[in-house]
Image 1 (spheres, rainbow, N blue to C red):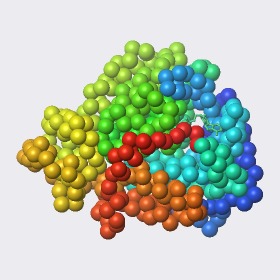
Image 2: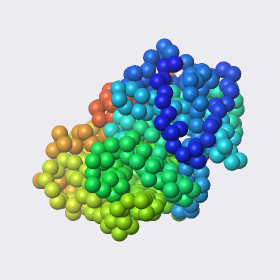
Image 3: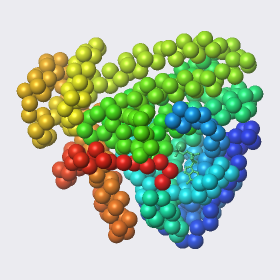
Length: 464
Ligand code: AMP
Ligand code: MG
């Protein structure tokens, strides 16, 4: 077995998981394997067959994890309905969840079929790859394996399994599950999570309070990074919020091209709850739900509800100071303050709907971007004001990507696979997105936003 699996999650209360068996697949076909990730995990690629990657051959009994979550504001009991934890792979002192997505039904599937379409698993592979190389903390995709089964969503296409790697799949929603179903288990579960993700906190006088603070911090860092690169997660339900600040669950996500605080791509997000510019306030709301889920700890420790609330009260200041520090870097400003300049630029972006990514490139290296939206006296004035205090290209280079997954290029690449079985365009896109901060000799399309009408109509889906 190439994985060295040791599933500590199974030492927890049995209410937290169920056994699950990956579905039988006759001819699993490896479409993509992430060899760099195999290397990071110390995995021998020769031995990583598609049968092992789909759980057809396994050394451990896989499990589906239970969790709960606020989905669009409503509390629901959930669990891995089409995912299974193959086990925890240990390498170099680190522990990684190896999870299969699309591997068949589990006790939590409800009416779902447990399957995933190949286009949605390729899409997740691509977005997680892009995010990783944009230096945003994220789940990573080890492989996409096509199955011989047809899966019907909006259209019928082959099924596939994605092999997903995370530090863990523990979510705010896992705490909500424990708090609602087995509150007496919460101290032991929280200690487990602290051990696994924040072991240094055991030294602290008030580990549970420090834990809440640390989760808030890693989540702020994650969302600030999303705003840095223009990412819209699309479904920030509390069950999709990782306890370790890893971006995950790439369903109805997309990148903003034409800047708009209200940008929404998800087919079901009719009221813009998870719009680009709402992600800060939704994170705050989710953290409040997480703090509620920690309340049963108060009966078992010195933790108090007032302390949790006091930490939550710090959210706006802490988020904003990290957000503005990030935005100053994007503008190449190395001094503190200057929030008004950031706000001025944001107002200009919102008014003109200029391409978010290219705006920063235009400021950093004007000759590389050609778009009439920047040919105005107002933008020139803004650029001059900024140049007086910043535009330090060295600061800007590492935070302003040249390449993001442009929605239309992603769709073209997926269509080419579905229509012609050809992954070459998809793989070219992966190559470009591997070094997003470096100018490459590639077609200028990789840097161009799609036609405005395309972006305005662009729709992404959950559970496909
Ligand atoms: P998501 O919105 O993708 O986070 O999914 C919400 C819940 O729906 C999770 O518990 C999933 O496991 C479950 N789910 C989504 N698609 C399916 C499916 N095809 N079969 C079974 N469960 C599913
Ligand atoms: Mg989910």
